[in-house]
Image (cartoon, rainbow, N blue to C red; front, side, top):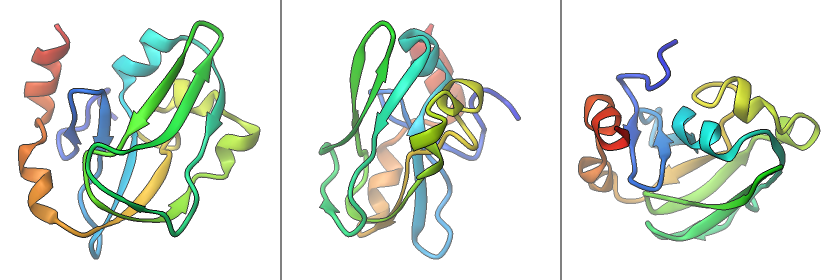
Length: 127
């Protein structure tokens, strides 16, 4: 899998959003973000059922170097969190765009995806 999967959308705050599946998207931090953070030691997951608006801080990732807020680029409701990160937060480092996902969101405004970057634009943004 590419470091920045082509089918994902990306936010300037270095979050990714997967394509919607029945109105539900996955959210995680990008490979670029995890490499800047260093070894992830803890992920503060959001609560299932929480209503969120685009731009809301919904989670935090702590590493040996820093802590970073995670912002949702879309509005909706948290429908699932990646509980595997409780015991293996370093999954964010080893597979940021896959098994290191943070939560799943039932999006309420799909047009918010249109303002996010595609993989090429995000790669250029990071350079």
